Amino acid sequence: MGCDMQRLTMKILCLSAGVAATTFSLAAQGPSFDCRKVQQGSIEARICADPALSELDRKLAEVYAAASAKAKNENPPVLKAEQRGWVKSRNDCWKAADKRDCIEYAYRNRIVELQARYRLVKASPATFFACNGNPSDEVVVTFFRTDPPSLIAERGDSSSLMTLQPSGSGSRYQGRNESFWEHQGEATIVWGYGAPEMKCRKK
Image (cartoon, rainbow, N blue to C red):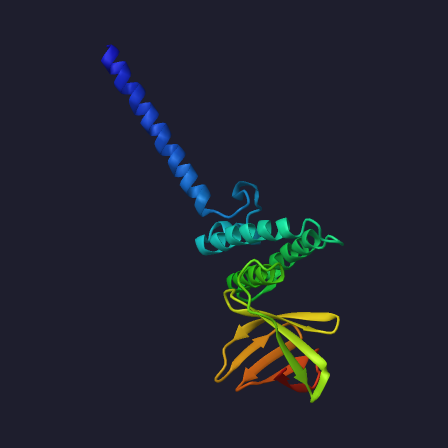
């Protein structure tokens, strides 16, 4: 009788351990948020059902935590507000024709943005370009080893984050309203919506 009870207890313990391991494994594969609390049919529900999107969400959570550590003395504190805005724009992917592609792009772009802005990955030394034959018309470019590769270009008091785009020759980066294309030591830069191209050379 004592042996039977011992065997039964061991079986229960093994079963409990197996359930706990399975639960932990499923949690590790899910996103950073609790899928039990999401609304059916929402963007969050799509992320919960997609292992690759869940992995991107976990990656962003790690990157955001690292950025937050660097932004703790930020004044004004813009990171939290920007992240709330990003979540809203991600959730607007329900309007997109290809919702999954929209969600994936939103995550990858945000990860690159945080890694570059808060210097969470390796960066090249700053490169200085003089534009339109005017040494004072300067654009400073820093390249980052993100995925995809990115750069931050600074001109006067404004800056632009750009990511590498497919190109037949040279390196072409595109931002919201700015672009940077370098080929054979010369850069073609567009700074602002509808602005003319600037021809720039390394200083």
